Structure formats: C-alpha cells, structure tokens
Image (tube, rainbow, N blue to C red; front, side, top):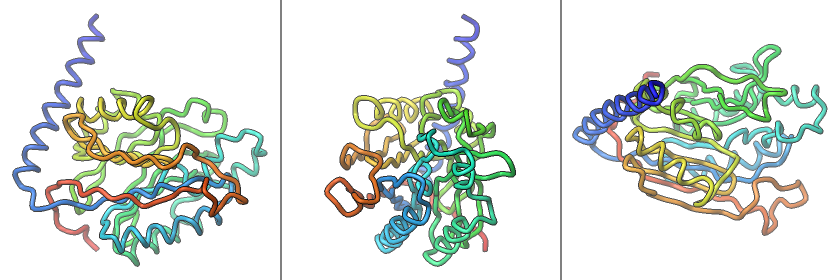
Length: 286
C-alpha cells in the first residue's frame, strides 16, 4: 500500500513540475519546431543498405523544414537483435562505436550539412558491450548525448541495458529520449521527465497501432504533461500533454522486408511531419 502511495505521489509531483514547465513554455512560446519521423522498413543486418535508404529521406525531411529528424529504433542494423540465428560474432560486428564508427561519422556529417538535430537508433559497440542506443546529434554535427534502452526483454542475451535518464538541451527546449519498450514503464518515463524534459522522442520497432500501442503513449503523455513523438517502421504518432492523439499515420503492417522486396508494394516508407509548439531557445552553441 505504501509503495503504491509513493508511486502515485511521484507521478503527481512529476506532473505538477511538468505542468509548470509546460505553462512557462507556452507563455514564452514564439513558434513551433518541425519534427520529422522517418518511417522506414528495416533490412535485417545490412548497415549499408539501411544507410542508403535513410540518407535521402533525412535530406527530404530537411528540405521539408524539419529541425529535428527522428529515425526508428535500430534503423542502421535493422534491429538485428531480433534474429538470434545471426551468429554472435556477426551480430557483435554490427555494433557501431561512438564516436569512431563509420556510420556514426556519416550521421554526424549529415546533421552538420543539413543543420538539423538528428536522433538515430542503432546497436552501439562500447568495448565488449552492446547497447540498443539512440543518439542525438546537433546541427553542428556534435554529439549532444545518447540514451541506452532500459527494458531489453529478449535482447538481454546479447545486449546490456542502460541505467541513465538523461535529457538534452536543444534549440527547441529540453528533449528526453526513450526507446520502444521503455514506454511501457511509467516510473522510467517519469524519471526522464523529472530531469526536465519538455518533450519526448521515442524511436521504436515493436508494437504499433491504435489497439496495442497508442494508449500506452497517451497514458505516458497524460501522466507527465508532455508531448511524445513516436517513430516506428509502420507508424508515426504524436500524443499531446493531455493524452490526446495529435497525429497518427499508419504505413503498412510490416516492420521488416527482404532486399528483394525493396521498392515493392510491401516497402512502404514516408517522411511525416508535425509542428510541435515549443519555447524556441537560442541555437545550440557551435
């Protein structure tokens, strides 16, 4: 009973804090920030193929006025952790070191060229460890920070969970990141918001759609009084601070395609945009 009461009090305190922050942000708002979600099917275990598919869509997002661009969970390796038949050493080789990885450097160069803030999901190699990670790159190409997925479930056989709840200063306010299954843990999301997040970005690749996924995001938004942008291989979703669905776009019913299916009717992909009300800050220092 006491634990339940403590949990309720935690939610109430976080919601009150974020309600104040939201009111201050709204009072000081002078516009919106255009967020783009790159909804793109995975190619399992082929980093180069996934990069070739993503890059032109990120460029399209920048031409469309997006200042923040978000990929799916593990876009780069196609969520290879789902296929345990991939030999362990082959899986480990898919890990991308930060900041020395070839594709990490390409992402940083792209963010700098397009002058965007880019959230990208991939398997991170950190020495002997592997993490399901999302990085946030600034418009100068510098790493603003990274978030490692906490709720790994089946991934635990090869990946190591994160333990931190960082938030990141951006030109559009303070952003929090979470990845896929993390959204199902109210206390985890509340801890991220307690660090000052004014909005949350959620690269994902698991459940999607109005029955199994959307009510979860709505609840996390409502509990913490923050908007959430959810980007998935088959869905783009934005939930508002009161739990309303501000935008929902579904794109097919598959997450993964084979190389032979690239360009076919099964390969549905699109850049979606949402203009998120924010208190615009000064640009991130160069």
